[in-house]
Image 1 (cartoon, rainbow, N blue to C red):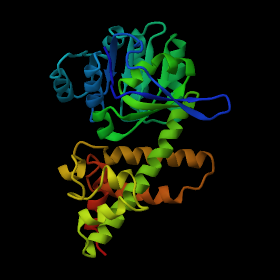
Image 2 (image 1 turned 90 degrees about the vertical axis):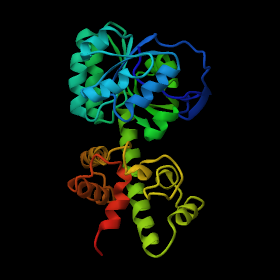
Image 3 (image 1 turned 180 degrees about the vertical axis):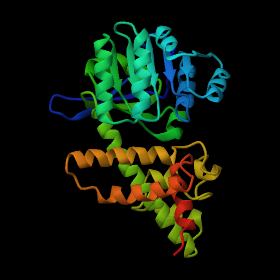
Image 4 (image 1 turned 45 degrees about the vertical axis):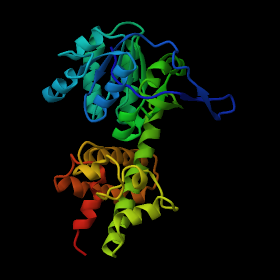
Length: 328
C-alpha cells in the first residue's frame, strides 16, 4: 500500500561534472513494492494518495483527524490503519506528509518500532534540515532506507500529479525509489545528502512567500486605482511580473478563471500558518550562517499579522485580503 502519488516522466540526475541532466522514466519501470503506507491525509496528502490509487498502488492511510480518515476510506481501494505501527508493519514503503518537525520526529519514533530491514521511508514534509538528518539517522539505525523529499507544486500539483521532489539522502536509495516518486510527481531533483532537499525547499518557499506578498500588494494597488482584476492579471502574466503566484494561484478572487483558493474563499490550499512556519525556518538558517534576509523578515511580519487575524488556516494567497483591508 502507498502513501502518495503524482505524475511521472522526468528525473534529474547529477553528472560527473556536477551538472543536472534530465532522463526519461519508463512508465512500466519496476515499482518498489506493492504495499505503501501514507501518513498525513491533509490537503496535499489525499490528492497525492488518489494519484497513487490511480496508478495501481494499494494505499493504507493514517491521520490524527477522524474526519480525514473517513474521507480517505471513501476512496475506492483505500484502506486505513489505526496506528502508525500498523502502517509500518503492513507496508513495504511509507510516505509521510506532516505539518512540522515535531510531528515528523514523533511519527518516526512510532513507525520505526514496527519497521523491517531495507524498508523504504520517504518524508515529504517541510521541516528543518537538522530534523530530517535526525530521522535519517534513526532509520539507518534500524536498517531502513530514508529520503527527505519535500515537494513543490502545491495542492494543484498534488491533484494533477505534477509535483517536484527535492530529494536529500543516499543517491542509490533515490534510484530505487524513482518508480514511487514517478507515481506522485513529474520530476525530482537529487540535492545531496540528508537534509539537502530541505535546504532547497526552504529557500524556494522564502521566494514563494515573498512573490505572493508582492503580487497581492501590487494587485491591490492596481485595483484601487481602477484596474479590472482580470485585465491587470493578464498584463502581469504576459509581462516581467509573471510568476507562479500571479499565473497559477493569483490571490485576487476572479482574476483568473481557475479552481484556485482565492475563488473559493481561500480554502483548500497551502495554509498561511504553514508558509509562516517555513519562512521562519529559513530565517533560522540565515541566522545560523550570518546571512542577511531583509525581504524575508518583512514578509514574515506580514504573515505573522495574517495569522494573528485568525486567517492562518486559509490559503496563503489571502495576503491580498490582508492588504485590501489595511488602512492607508
